[in-house]
Image 1 (spheres, rainbow, N blue to C red):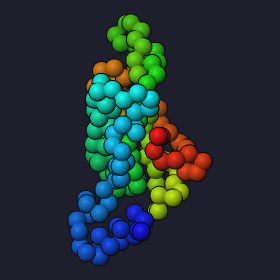
Image 2: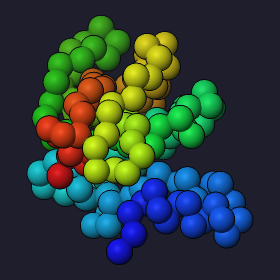
Image 3: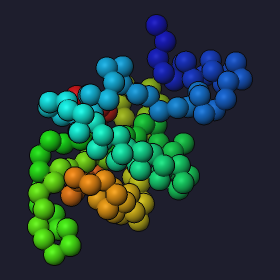
Length: 148
């Protein structure tokens, strides 16, 4: 029974590529645990797109390796937004990034505001159906890393 940090040390000792050893964890049950409530294909598609933007921006900014885990969460609530000159009620995406050694405790990552602004704008502009992006600043404990 090894913890993630112990497995990573072994991977480094074996000479495995850093991209493999330090890849962010993904939940065993799959993407569905990052969709609160009922899991629907449309929700999963929105989440995949938002998550891809978040991760690609982390990599582009050189922040991916600075955080231990990062992901988007689909919230099945609608919030008012503005599209053109009209109000629109669309879904919300939460972003989560944490720093930890052992994943038993974690601290939220203090990502730069300009980075969060860029990611938020991209998600809202590129992911049709999303009108709001929030950033989760909960530690573990009392919260868990994943939302479900």
